[in-house]
Image 1: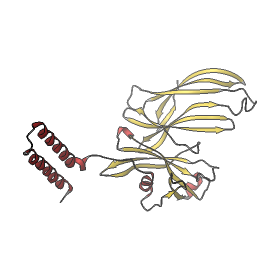
Image 2: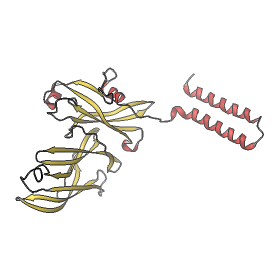
Image 3: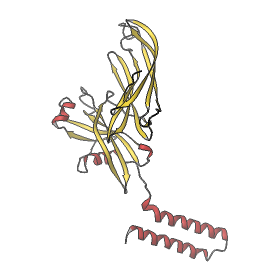
Image 4: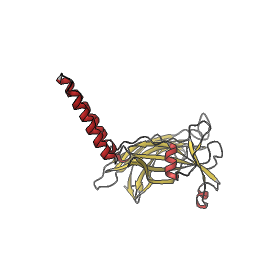
Length: 291
């Protein structure tokens, strides 16, 4: 007997039992309540198999989906992180300074991709073990999962998208509208070097069937490690940027309006400034627009 036929018969049985029970009850309000509850339960049983009910996929489940059920899932000593150990191809070894193997783990996942609560965007980190060699940068990957026919399915996956300058990046980002019915995901990255500190936002989006960074917007820069009180090499300067996506006349991707203000060095002189730049989408990513 199929699941749908069994559901129909069971629903009819519940309604029959409720009707039978009302024969022995004299209060109309109680009769109506029993019949209403019976109809509700019968409806849930009848339509339950067709409801698109999903749940949060675990990291181990996601790794098995991305790399196959035969892939061995490792667990960190503290039991908090699931990861896999990958042997690299010759092409991939060049990306990772010819390391023999790397670890891949899930660093972030969130439902609601393209406004669908049953689609998830997932971010991975592929690189050296957290305990060990950090002479080269880990690389961000991303995948789209969907809940369909009672199971998780991979819509697409790119393992090597862009380097992560923050080794321990956990991208607590957010969805952004980058065009008419076009979604992107914004996350932050940060680099602290001898010359100072720089932060920027990365916008990951699906373009021509691939996930890729379509915009990299600098949000802060300074020379805090090169000026007092840490050093006396040059005066302290810092600038910050704010931006927004703005609509354009033609359909497609929005433009990005970036306003930057603060201080910088010009001919060894510290000056204050404010400037506005516009970036437009072309050939798969955002470029500075000519004024």
